[in-house]
Image 1 (cartoon, one colour):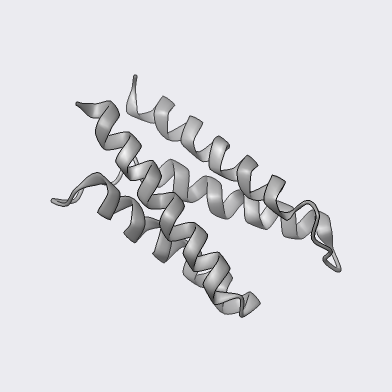
Image 2 (image 1 turned 45 degrees about the vertical axis):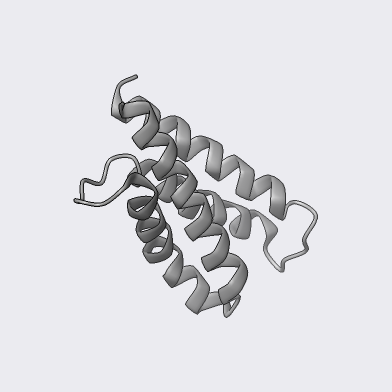
Length: 102
């Protein structure tokens, strides 16, 4: 599979998963919160398979997930869930991308 197609699918999947997990929660502006979560997780899913570093795919994905999630975690002060899901999700996507490349 072409890397950009894989990255797009991973981004869409991770973004939709984030929205589904947040649907039961309440926010002052729920639409904006869901859009922000989708765009953040889409960025992780899209970038993790495309970043080239001399590391294993899961490590690359975890680094991407951590760095992309950091700004949202700082703004919301919800460090553990945002950084945790971003890092673990990025690692899984990085692992998947590395496995697909072989």
